[in-house]
Image 1 (cartoon, one colour):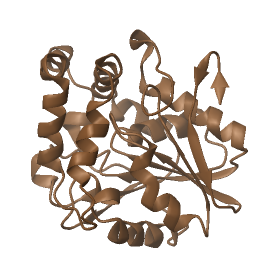
Image 2: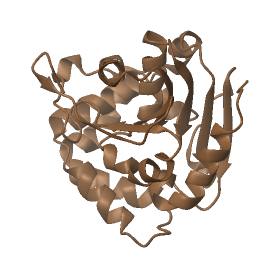
Image 3: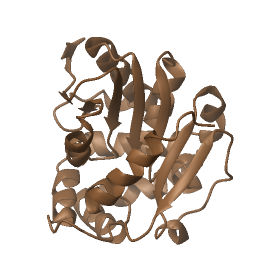
Image 4: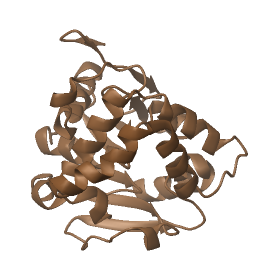
Length: 258
């Protein structure tokens, strides 16, 4: 789809009155969700898209790169495909993008599913400008090397033997610095304490139990329920697709959510 001179790329499979709209994380793309698109297409319309500057979607100008701007693409895809009743499924950075999408266009959003997201103060509570600058320095100096180290640290298992670490490293390192660094800056500047009360929908998160010691846990907030998966890292939908799909299926069957 073209909009204002930009290309927005998505994939749609399946059919039904209810849609699952999958939002990937920082420096990833919609291929993160291929196992879920295949597994849930018999029950839902399943749509994945590339967020701004990722995959095959055109970038936003670096100075204009915000999570709100990314969420506007989500709304455009919903409109183009006529997605009336939808669950937003967001991994990592896709979690706050889903919150922004629900905040700005709440009609028909049945809920948000977060995937290893929204519980770490170091990522989802606004950081001081000095800290943001310091944390961006390694990315500015060596983006591919920084990404390779990060992926090795937070990816714990590969149940399918499909080379998840190598795949993620290659995908994430292919994102140009002009997209990766402003996107990370936008994430670190996002403030869950400010934005959460305005989201207005319930969120169920499926997070990694093994990575909890590495995070600075946020206080639990109203309308957020967190369940954890053992023996997976930051990418459970790729590391152990069958177990993750079982968790997601159970979660979607537990309506109405609190």
